[in-house]
Length: 192
Image 1 (cartoon, helix red, strand yellow):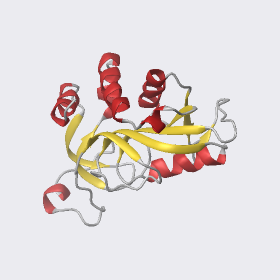
Image 2 (spheres, one colour):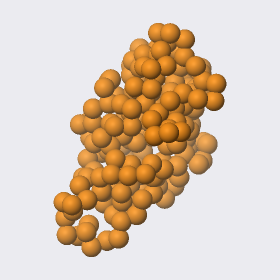
Image 3 (cartoon, helix red, strand yellow):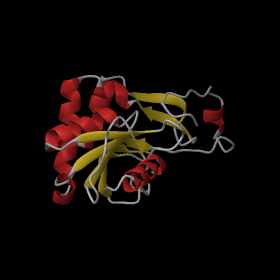
């Protein structure tokens, strides 16, 4: 699957948006990838995830569990785990910090593949990795459908992305005039 094919999947799902967006990191961007829309078609989700899994190095495929941060990574994480034949779990923030809940548990030393929908700065991934570590697991690799940092985000472990994009981001007080002229919207699930 080429980058053009992947972008075509996002466009077909009306998941590639242009405007003024407040990202979960708090940064602003003129482009947003609404992975929930691209993943709402199970056939499309399976196709995209199969392409992502095919890019993973062998050590990232041979893990004890797949863990994803809620909310955005849950569907991608589940589908990666399904295709790998591995348990799927997610971390969530009931009190502002990621943790395993709902009876999810990792055996001490369990190897984990962390899966995200979109990575921008790597902050959510690093926070999720900290939760996995606190639960006794070891994240050996991370994967995402989209790395919108074009490879510059630091998630703390090696990262494989299906698609790498260079999408500019800006601090709220450093917007270019054309972006500042557009009302900002917050399409994600995490408060900025």
